[in-house]
Image (tube, rainbow, N blue to C red):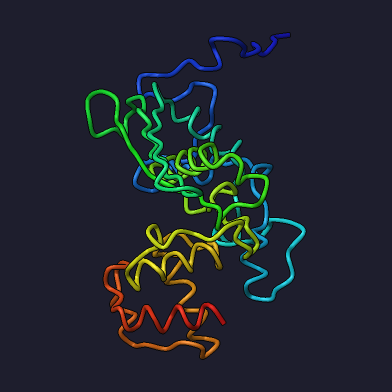
Length: 251
């Protein structure tokens, strides 16, 4: 009677000629690329309380049947995806913009696989911030760490095309700023203020999520604009409409 060989040690991280782990069953998209969304283990996902609270809806007890915009992914799930994809280095650049406001840029150097454009490793970077206005009292003591975690999560998510917001990215201040935020670091454009409002009050950090929210507002007859169908990014939103949306979202 034959026995299945137990995979352990170096064999767990052995990659084939395509740059994929030999002991992992990958899920692929129709175009042949890896469906990283399907590679997330369910235990790393849970309902996005903020999304349901913002719409006065009950919070589900399970993730079954929920859309990506209704979910959050834990840091452990992001780390597992990054390890599975394979990287050779992670760099952080942290800037203290002012007291109570920290930005971090995360750069990940990914190993080459069959999806890579370059012959060697591919680098990708993303940024995030942590302020006294978007963290709770405990996390406010560790703004640099929070900003780095958020930047790392965002970097992995965007590179692997994951549309589920990271639990580390959301505003945990519960609407009560720990200190007065400096006017010098506040967004100075209506569109910038709109993006901040979407992140802080509705846990929306992408234009795709914004479009979904616009559809909900249309159905509820809270905001209707035929021109919104032509918007392809935040930069397409006129300042006048951004101000109207901010007013609606703050209600």
